[in-house]
Image 1: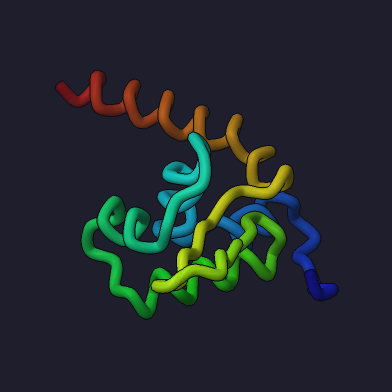
Image 2: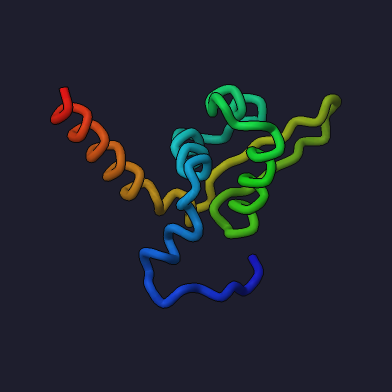
Amino acid sequence: MEKREFPNCPVETTLMLIGDKWKVLILRDLMPGARRFGELKKSLSGVSQKVLTAQLRDMEQSGLLTRTVYAEVPPHVEYSLTPLGRSLKPILDALQTWGESYKAAQA
């Protein structure tokens, strides 16, 4: 992980790392365990291969996930969360709870 400049505000730092819609959904999908690229792409309807690849690379560079390549034919690549990525679970849980409450209030 390279040394980055971070904003003074911790909320802004968090948003810089996971503020993108796709990154939050990638985190959601990887919380239960490792997933292959194709599984992620299928789960994230509407994301292009180019965007998903860029988001995964950025998250890997930030230390949120790891990419494991298995020497097989065809190549088998899995993505999984690092302990740092897993530490975001309470944030995702709070987002889910808030979203459920909001939807219920709108019904």
